[in-house]
Length: 161
Image (cartoon, rainbow, N blue to C red):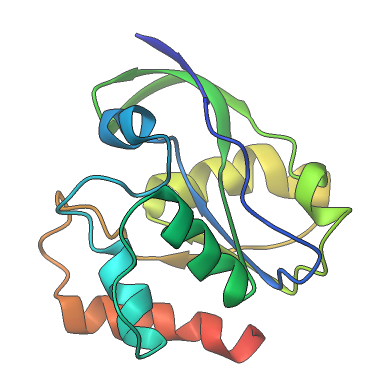
């Protein structure tokens, strides 16, 4: 199924870290915000890093990342994908990150998951000349990585904020 990215990037003039997924899952597209699947550990991990309550809902999550100088978007503008399976992606078309990179003082870019990182290095890094750090996917499908290991890995973003 062809999916065109329906979500706007989240950033402002204070954003210093850009976190990129691959493409919003069906649950995220339905909810209209990033990492919206109830079992996705993204928001739980960020809350643990910043020692705060887990934000729920679109506006509280938006305010949370902006308050912590984090920008959110995805590597792909469109692709063919089956459900939420990054492994099924065909015909990937990248997002134009200049939308963020020209308007925010982004110091570091992180990709959530291997597929996001692969598409970034192949389709976007040649354009931006900026490398990205790969973080483990917070997806419920990536249950091999414990919550503690996720928190340790995502802690790398703190050095840039």
